Image 1 (tube, rainbow, N blue to C red):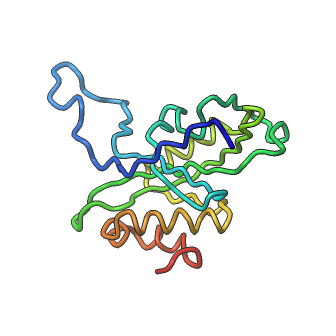
Image 2: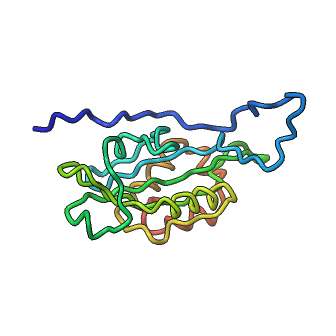
Length: 176
């Protein structure tokens, strides 16, 4: 039995918050990137679950806490696979929808408190998600199925409003 706390599982999704600097005199906002409409979904294929963990925005998700991350996967041979699916939500004429989605790999070995992740990959995937790209083809089928089911069940209306490109990325991995 483990002494570790259960990961904090939230069912909150960040959907289009107001601009925090809206109306601020002297700030044009030029060059600023807003992450207000992005939510990280942790996909745990080991437990067969997915959940939103906003702590991942600052590398403080339940999965990442108290882990020293290395850039060589071979140094974590017994680690468990996780994914952070950087999910961007936008609005169109039909309402809110999943706009961008890019998954980044994590490997964590709690016993040795070490993990593997490539920070540049995470940053690039966050950027691609913000730009409306769908980057999940490198995920294993089980993880992709968990993510697709989570997105569909979390908010069926947002799923329906999403692009065919996003839905088609899950063909064969989630019930259409």
